[in-house]
Image (tube, rainbow, N blue to C red):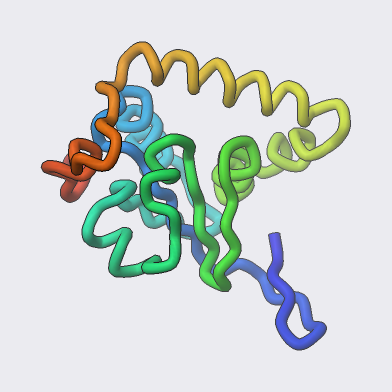
Length: 145
């Protein structure tokens, strides 16, 4: 993954993964990501938290509670399927798989996996209230490793 700057391609140096602290699947995946050998450092930050809002003031924070969002150090924003793929790309053991997932053969598999995770998440995470602050109440640092 690279970013463009003045016609030059710049490698991604680190990624911030926003995850929903109310979601059991998200918490499990956070723990799994932290245990993997990372080729590109992953900083995991609770979605819609004060920390996320401070770091990324222009981001749609309510949207980050709806789907996984990953932000690159050069301002790249990945959501949904692309966010899952870039997380795998950052991991030593899974980088080759991430490349395959971007191909015409792999992309449908990646999309189906994300849809299955979203369905599971919808069954296990508490619902958000519309504009009442329920989604951000009590959001703080993730569980200790």
